[in-house]
Length: 283
Ligand code: GUN
Image (cartoon, rainbow, N blue to C red):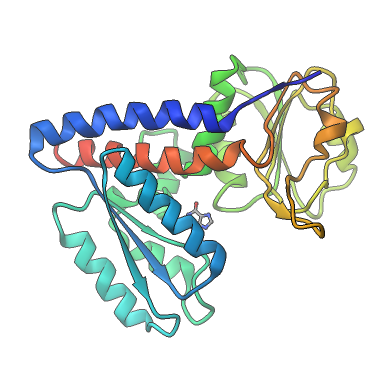
C-alpha cells in the first residue's frame, strides 16, 4: 500500500520558507518581491489559476499584481506591457498565463520577457541554462515534482525514470532535472510503442500527458514512485490524474493524489522562483 505524497502539506512548507525569505528581503530592501501576472481573455480555468496565484503571493509576503487584458488585445499592446514590466525595477517576476488566445503566439510573448524575471522558467535562455546544468529560473511544475521526490527521500541516482509527455511546460524540463540527478531517463509520448512495458520497468514514473487513467494500475512496478501531473475532468465532474490511482496505490511505494498532489506545488514553486529572482536581481 503506497504512502501518499501530500502536495498540499509540502506546498505549505515551501510557502512558509518563501514568506521568511520575502520578509527578510523587505526588511533589507524596503520593498517586497514583486510578481506581475498577465492574463489575456476570459478562459475560466486560467481565471481561477491566476486568482489563486494572486492570493498565494499576498499570503507569502510577495507584492502580487494581475493585469487583466481583453481577449482581443493585439500582440503589439501585449508586448508593450511586457516591456514596461521588464523596465520596472520593483518587479522581479513576470508571468503570462498560458494558453493565450489563438491570435497571439505563446513563444513570441514569452521570448519578450526579461529572462531574469521569467519566473515561469519558460524563456529559451532559462531553458538553455537547464540544458547545460546551470543555475537559473526553472519551470514551476517540474521543480515541484523534484521537491516531492526529495521530500520522500527518493534519490533518482541510477534509477530508471519514465516521463510520460514531452511538453515544454513539464515533460522536457522534468526529464532534464531527473537526468541532472543521475537517473536513467526515458521520455514516452503519443508515438511510443509498448508503453505498458516501459512503465513496468520504471522505478520512477512521472505522468504528464493529460489523459485520464492513461497509466493502468497493474503496469506500476512494485515499490515504484509515481508522480501524477495530470489534472483531468471526467464525465461525473470529478478531477482525476493520468494514472489509475486505485490500481497503482497497491503497488507503488509513494504516489501523489489528484487533486492535492502536484497542483499545489506549482504555485508554491512560482513564489519560490519569485524570491529567487528578487534576490538574484539585487546582487
Ligand atoms: N498554464 C497552465 N500552467 C501554466 C504555467 O505553469 N505557467 C503559465 N504561464 N501558464 C500556465
